[in-house]
Length: 337
Image (cartoon, one colour):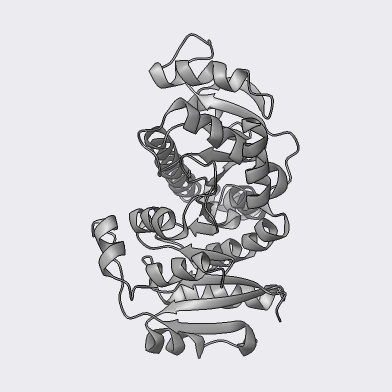
């Protein structure tokens, strides 16, 4: 039992708490015998949900936390005042090395602030970036940063590239991942002041496979494996990505249901279409890690359902087994040597 990977889950965070969070945690425990889950939240509500499922009770534990941090609350104030919240208690477990990871679908601001204040940064990390995996025509790519550091400097972006490369190679299995910086053109002299300053630093960085600039339209085609940008740009890309994907699916469905002929055709292509669209489902890739902390913190969508929660818990196994934090520290220390 001592060899289990311990993951604490914020059972009260997100639009579908506690039901989908509890369900996803149980699914993860039932799928892998390597993990133990600590569900943190209002004990009575969590236990009510647990009664619906069959699972190994020795690998699911409930930790009571009566307070909930609302997404509309000021993050810093909420972290300081709500000590009995599921987010604060979960982060404390990671800080004290009682859990290997904390997973939340709750307030993004509180998770980001709490991760830095409570868990703390790895030595040498200037700013921890939030890094979601996004689907592309050729597989997946890592968008880094998508929400943690709006006012980033060039040195931050270089670290993002290094940490993102480590994550993609050792967690996602992409050897020598291609790194690109988001720009408004392919030419080296294009871009705003931050991009112009960062480009030559990435170009001359021996630790990464830098391929140059990438325009937003080329991201879905899979032109790079690690997409580097500051958080404002990254968040706009991510939200547009999600919105366009949802709109396209709705348009396709309406078109297929528009006439009798199209409905008959829809029946024939349904299996292939379902399989194709599944490849663009974000829930299959788990949550976004906040890289560069002294422990693993994962942020999932506020609308997360059980499948995304399950996959987020399971991705912790690879993260821990591959010692990603150790590899990040090694990468950054070698650069300083």
